Length: 406
Image (cartoon, rainbow, N blue to C red; front, side):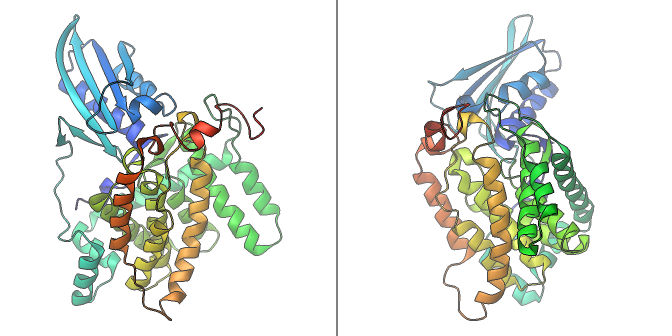
């Protein structure tokens, strides 16, 4: 496995595969052909079907320049759900056409070859193998990450944590309508105000956490600066948890940093053995993966055992199996924003349950089992339910209408 730095990346929303990935592809082509004076981009698969709502064409034109022609190819057969071709031109003559596949989390394959020349630094690729090794060495999962990644990881994750917290703060301060034809109102600020006015302590915590998830997710939907965790479609879950446990539950940054390392390890295992792409595996690969990561993070930060941490992660993913990716209008708004808040709440429940259940029974389902099941389920899901806006909520909710069809 690669470094967990590949899981946590900063960039413009609303989608790591549809915005950050295409932006990185455009930057690659600009570096490769600085003499080019025009560009042609052909989007296929999910990039073509939901590219407008995901601002794919917008980020390509902003990155390559106004002399960029973007076409949405709905008839071609893509090699991957997120396929694009970028052609560099000079004085009307083609210089080169390159095939890109946006595989999730902003990462690319270029002409069938992984773009990132990053080494595989982890000696193990399953939770079972990692747990066995940690037991032999008498270390915990976060210490395992430290051993593999080295001391520079702390600085990187400190910066990532700051960016996550900023996405929540900025989202809580923002008001108005999110861009696009859905005319969806931002609600994070008002939800946060409701939480502060509440008198029931349990309800306060629930509303606060939900408001933070809405805040970061609304920033993402508006094209703001967020962090993949593991994707931008699920970027509200870990920041909400970190903000909540840091400011409302008085956890230290050191505790949460330990948890963030384990969250990165969980996301890394999911990406290695399945997928984190909604276009390939559905929303179980995005929000489900993030719920597993967040559940493990909170369990670790609370000082639970590695077994309890794994169980929390397993529950986070298991109970999102089969979750479809069906963005209404192609926007990362409905059901994405609300789904982030629901998953953040589930993370706290999963960490709490893992602390108690393993005391009274032996768990039959491992984290590795659920990752394998998620991968199989993702392959079985029809294309209409994998970030194409051709099924599910995307076809029963008319673009721009409310629940009464008005």
